[in-house]
Image 1 (cartoon, helix red, strand yellow):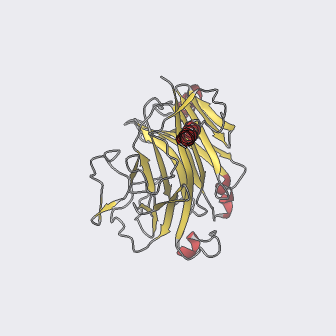
Image 2 (cartoon, rainbow, N blue to C red; image 1 turned 60 degrees about the vertical axis):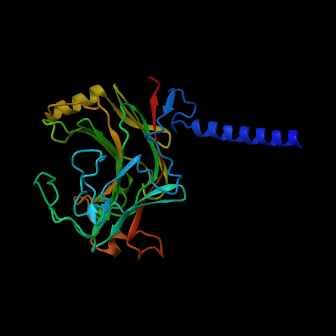
Image 3 (tube, helix red, strand yellow; image 1 turned 120 degrees about the horizontal axis):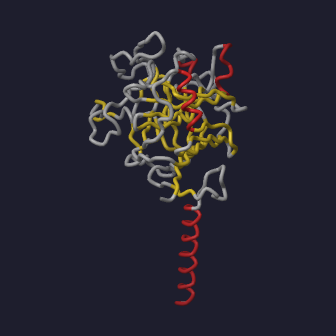
Length: 323
């Protein structure tokens, strides 16, 4: 009996060791054989399999403490936390973990205690607007990293709202995607299939200018199903992948040439550390839900009254090269 028990224990240990080995052997969807010799950055990645969000890994924007925003939390990721793009405002309550996924929620919530401030200006006419009716979600990765392969498996919210995957830090911004789930404007029906990515220069002289941007077509509606989106970033440029296939990219030289043609002071600015942002925003120039019914127009039957539309994320993974 003793020997039999020992054998069972050995088998269990071998099984769990094998499971752990499988867990570690996760590679980019576009490089399943790991020819790029990628190493998973476990501190910056998340499978969202736990019951609670790991707040040591993610900063939740708009989280309240005793009814007041926790903007002065000692571990906030930057000096000034953005409230969101008006009319929507970030709420720390607009997320949940469900069935091994992170769900970011856009809510029709007119009774939310919106900020009285006007939004920061946007567009050529420096438009400002107030925060009202719509709350959204924003999570910021606490781990900063430089260069690597970033990948997400997600499905955009099916509404006039963006579902975004981007990074910011070191005076720069890399927008991997800002997917607009559903356009109402007859002249903008393409928005729900549009691939829009860009690089921004947030230095003092750059002032947020887009030093490189590109608009393409995915060939599918971003809110219809889950897809895998990846981007490889190194000192020579970036390459973007969709469902494991190379889609587009830009070299350092191409970015410099694009910025020079626009007359911008800087070109390639992706030489510093960034951290990942997951959020939803309203884009007023594309259209904004003006009622609960408008927000829920594309929701399934039986879910049109709850005032919530979801941006679903199965995982976020970051790989880097061995130093």
